Length: 139
Image (cartoon, rainbow, N blue to C red; front, side, top):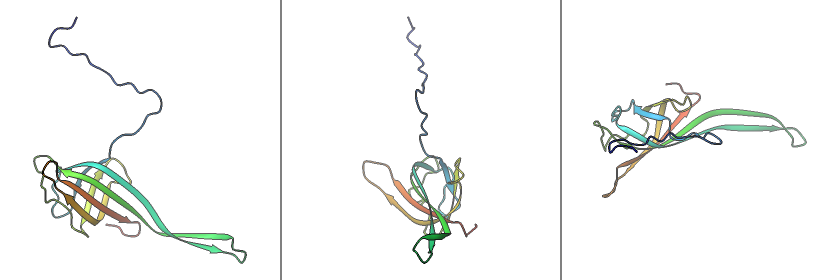
């Protein structure tokens, strides 16, 4: 029998296939309104794309493919949080945003493509930030 102040400790067990949960981005800095440590990222979508040109022979068969102008696009959903939180700490279009992340595809400098915020009387302020990173442009 446990005493009044004792609690049972439950240890999680994985059975089957391990699944990765959560987001990797942990901080946003670099732009004028940035508040270091003032963001909690709740969603993260990354895509990679490039232009391509297919070269065909006289029979219409593809014989060569040129892939160029690669880019990555990152969409972040977050909210201001912590002691330095600010409801006005959105990047401007064209600002450089430095994303801190444990994921090498996400971590680094990005160009802000668009940013929006949503407020409501019974909820938190939410930011949607769209970032882009071109393979041919180094910051």
